[in-house]
Image: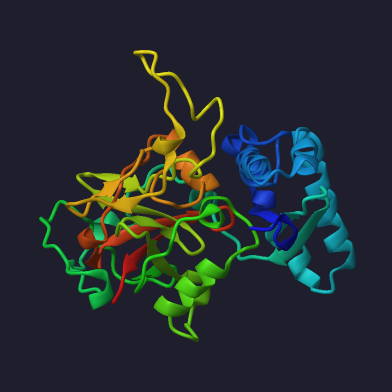
Length: 336
C-alpha cells in the first residue's frame, strides 16, 4: 500500500448522552466526555500510524487531550455551519482521517439516538431472552464455501422474534484475503465494499442494519464489513482473534517465553490451510480482522473470549452480536 494513496481512519460516536456515563469517562482524556471510547480510538489510530510509518500522526496523537479538543472543535465548527436545523443537537458520527503529513480531517454526520445500554451493555445476553422462539438449522452456504456441519443445540443461540432493530447478517460467498488493510483501519476499503456487494442485496430496505459475515482463506470468521462479530459457542460468547499484522515486529510482539526463547518473524506468518483443513498460524497473527474499539471493551469486561470460529459452524437463525464505534452493540440473526 502506497502511503500517498490512503489515510488512516477511525469512526467515532459523538453523543451528549455519554456525558452521563462514568464508564465512558474512564475511557476519555477529559471527564466527562461526549466522545465514545476515545482512548481506544486514539490507541488504534496510533497503532496504524506506527505500522504504516506516519511519524507526524504518531507525534500528534501523543497528546490525548489535544486530540479531544481537535474533535470537539470540529463538531462545533460543523454545528455553526450546519443547515440541518434540529439535527444540530443529534448524536453524530465522526469520521476521523489522518494523512501521512499529520493533517487531520473530521467529517460529521447525524446518526440515530441510542440508549446508554446499547453503548455500554451490562452483558451480551440476548435481548428479550424469554421471547426466544426461532429454531436454528444448519447453514447451507454456497458451494464455494463448502458444506455445513450439524451441531448440538448448545453450540449456538436462536434469536428472538424479529423487531425493527434486529440486524440481519449474511455469510459472504467468498473469502477475503488478510492484508494490512483488513487489520488496520484505513480508507482502503475496497475489500469490504466487494464483500458487501457479493453478500447483500443491491438496495436493502434497512442498509444500516444489514451486515455481511466475512471469513479468511482458512474458512475462519474474521469480522463484519462494518462491525466486530460475536458468536455463541460452547456456552459462551466468542469473537474471532485479530493478532498482529503479519511481519510486524516490536518489543510487545517479540516477548520472551518462560524458557527464554524468543518468537521469530516466521511465527507471525499469514494464516494458511493445514493438511487437515485447520489454520496453521501463530495465535499472534489471528484470523485477520480489525481491532474494534467496542470489541476491545467487551473482551476486557469478560463478556466474550477470542477464539477461531469455523464457517462450518454457522446456522441460519442463530443470534449474533455486532458492534462498532458508532452504533455500540446490536443483536441480530443469520439469514440465508
